[in-house]
Amino acid sequence: MREFEFRAWNKCLKTYIDWTMICAYHDLTSLISNDGVIIEQYTGLKDKNKNKIYEGDRLFDEHNEEWATVIFDDGKFFAKFETCIIDLWEVCDDLDVRGTIHDSLEFLESN
Image (tube, rainbow, N blue to C red; front, side):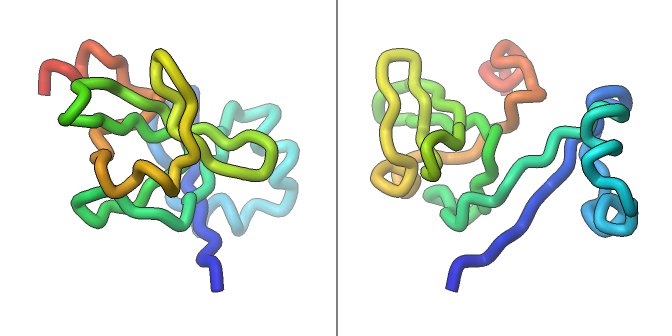
């Protein structure tokens, strides 16, 4: 059975919010549209280090020295590289989570 899990990014505070706090909010639609909260879903997959992969994660492929961003489109999760888009389940074991779309690539590349 697929595990459903989410995380929430607050654009104003520039930090992740505790998911239980989000769930306690009665009007989730209002919270997302008015307060600048972005909901990101767990893909059900893990990277080569067994870290959970979420929508919006930045993944690094050491073999090809290339970055990918996790996106959700047409009912599936993909790794979007600069040159191509690949079904995430096909490549997740070769990649590792290094950050999220909320981190600048310059920051991630320096670490």
